[in-house]
Amino acid sequence: DALTLHANATETMRLTNGTVGIGNSLMSSFDAEANNLVVGSGSGDEGITIYTGSSAGHHGSIFFADGTSGDAVRRGKIRYEHNNEVMSFSTNTSERMRINSSGMVGIGTASPTATLTVNDAGGAFMQLERTGQGHLFLSTDGTNGTIRTSTSNGALRFQTNGNNERARIDSSGNFFVATTTEAT
Image 1: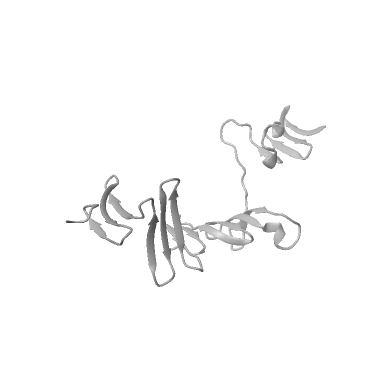
Image 2: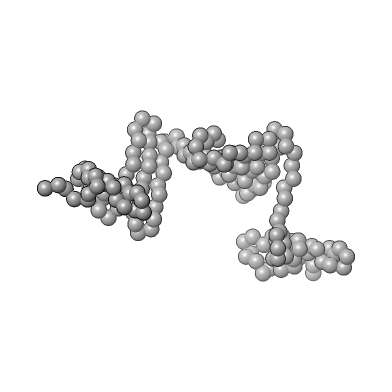
């Protein structure tokens, strides 16, 4: 039925029907999509450590595969590079996001130059969204920068100090400072 390992008469690991429990025997109690390996007893700190070298080319990695040859063996990847202290995330075999040793996040770039750097070959584009409240779009095509909003009234508002509106560009292109209505 089950293969168990014991230390000092206490069960420390269990293998049952293709699932492994380290520090527990409750693998079937967890979601079947991810219960092949369950680590921890559920009390106090628990974890997994990937211990690697620290020279160039030494990485701690978790791969996500959908086959056993070519790129299928690493379609997705989470990797830590010890020689330069970088955490990277890959999808569809390509790195998509990186956090460098200074905590800077790069999306679409391996060399972020600010707290958040977004780089897209088709032009950087970022959308901030709040459900039912509209969208704010930030984009550039390399020569032109754009800030635009999609709200119910089509206005781009600039707010400070607790959401107090200080300026507005309405859907007709009128620019208002310290007021939301046109002067008469």
